[in-house]
Length: 226
Image (tube, rainbow, N blue to C red; front, side):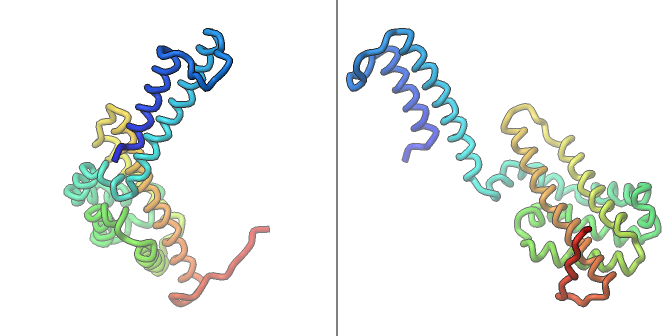
């Protein structure tokens, strides 16, 4: 079955040949002057260039999330294989950053476990784990940090620093020397951002639920800013 891109290219070439070299279509009467034909051909080129761009974008987009991950699979596998090294770097950052002062007193082993489980199974967290799984995991984290007396701002900063550390590593690990490589990096960063956006929201939700004295499964009260 011919590809969408192939059909578009053949259609463009066919029209160009018919209009530029083969003479005006007999169905169009009267025949326009040469300048009019040239203007018409120029307009067609712009239209079909847009069609081709849209076709390429559709082909890429229709690969779906799993195929998009395959584009960045090499970097994800590198991250997972170096999870221990990356985790040590994040733990060191969390226990020295002014944005996470309370984390300076936390057990390095606990921090190591939290970060390592994300980095070691990055592909799973980005694509395989459902929103329900992410919510449960980070609701529990928010509740734990409340029990430890960690301010909510520092809890969220810790997640942001973990995300930024990972993105910095991606930026230094991928050689962006083509449009496709740039797309790979952007797609991976989008997936990372989506995951950590949810992690931040669900950690805050768990923290607030614990602070409100609600049990698991109870909804937080709805409030409106005035």
